[in-house]
Image (cartoon, rainbow over all chains, first blue to last red; front, side, top):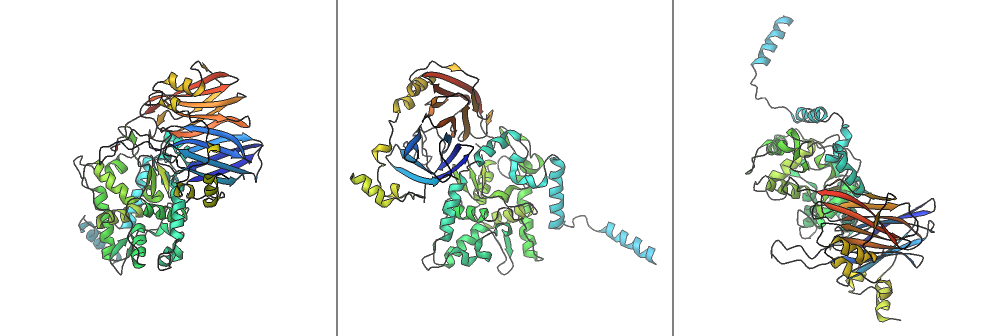
Length: 103
Length: 277
Length: 156
């Protein structure tokens, strides 16, 4: 199942992109209530947004971004039908990517 | 003669013991009437939004989250799970009316053949077992995802819980009603204390939600849980919060409570899955 | 072709990408990674967080920045924050929560095509100032808003 949901809408020359990602976003500060041990940091560190192969925006995230994180940004120069690609990488070296058409 | 009969019947009526129980329908009217008077500024239909129907500040935050709510991840997973065939080739659709789509508003219902209250989660697991699959855990995870998807397909449908003319159904309803109004736990509080008599007030920094409309939006993604949970997960949590020993998920007690609790929202629409703090 | 990239392309379909990248245990190709600014996230104070992510901790408050965050967070684990500005040439935005163990929550590098706008949800451990810092034409501008975080009554 995709860990990234994307909704992109173009209006008046500006495309608004909203994305929701499935990720535990552990800060590394939380303790496991059963073992008492710290749950290791496990969070997205970078999110990259591409339009037509060009990087439009990159985000650097820390553990303080909420679990199942949300991100929205806006940019110009795209049209309905163009593709937006969102990629994330986390501190464990895992990653995922998804694409959606702008509506 | 007519006058005599009338006065006799009036005398008889007055002589009736005052412990005659109200019917569920009468309870429902009184319940919904109570909230209408308590929150005159809230249109009936808006009670499905819980505290957000009575508090603008938290409503604003909730609306921001609803822009792209985290329960959408669960719903998508639920849709996949719902459509995935069991090992025997059948799917959940085979266990439900209308293939399981748009039916949430009918749950829970009283099965007169079995004499039991059937909740949606119970039905989901019974479907699995009937098809040779293992039961899912009751409170979170895949069962919440499937329930979320099924709730989503039912959005906008009017909640219509039926209490058949069967003493066992009425008994289940009354059991649920009793739980709702019964004080319990170290804190000696009833569901009704917070969610009826003190609804709209603060308990420390929490605003108490009205019980009317409570279950319209379940299962729910709670920011506190960082995930989805079913109705019985929340019931257990609520019992624990007043320091009462919780019942088991899908126990007869919680199913009875859910039966009463959902019936009290008859007339409101399903708007699950929901996002809450 | 880079072996990792070939494996990644083989197992992933881009349109409605599945979690195959995770399943395959494949690292995302290097070209996608920017330079993760770990030092900025390690900073334990607000100025360190700002200078770490923006290059300096000298910033001027600006009315041209609109910082939207609740007065009282419903739940400190999920606080919606939206930063927007009418300023032009905004190339970077940082969002800082002053009382977090690690005050920098996130920073955003915007290409010239981007509007000065970002919206996300952050965790706040306790009542603190949320500070949005914007870099435009080499200078730093900011907006600050106090967000109260309370202890719930229903047992948390």
